[in-house]
Length: 129
Image 1 (cartoon, one colour):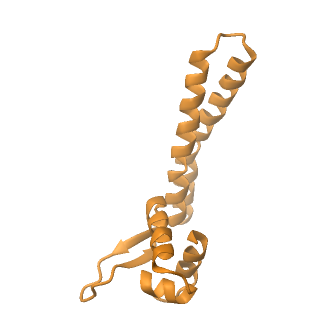
Image 2 (cartoon, helix red, strand yellow):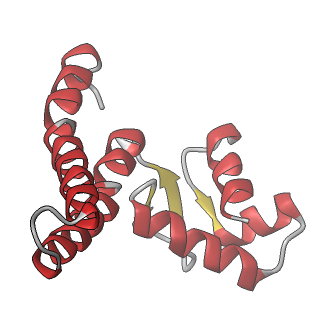
Image 3 (tube, one colour):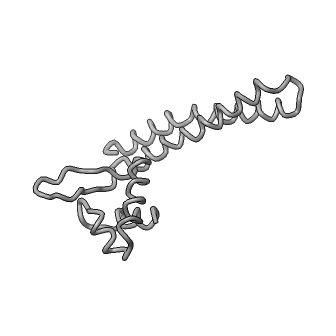
């Protein structure tokens, strides 16, 4: 459902859209749309906007949606890095598991170091977000 709701944001001609409008376009229940909107909000792909004179909440795709999503993926990488650190601490040097965990740690540490440069280069190419 999140992918379908994201598609509404990608293809809409409107500046903002409400959950009711999304539900109507998709023929989806309010609960399904609400869950998908919460998911897209939590990943930073969409944002809630004030809509003076409207009692409904309005949403739009963030201008910086893709860099924001990319940045939030670091949370998963950080969890994997911490798991590797815990495994390294629990195994002895020379143990094959220790060596595999060390390689896992090195890989995720490398991944965490890459996004700042990538995002800086992206912003240089696309200064508006």
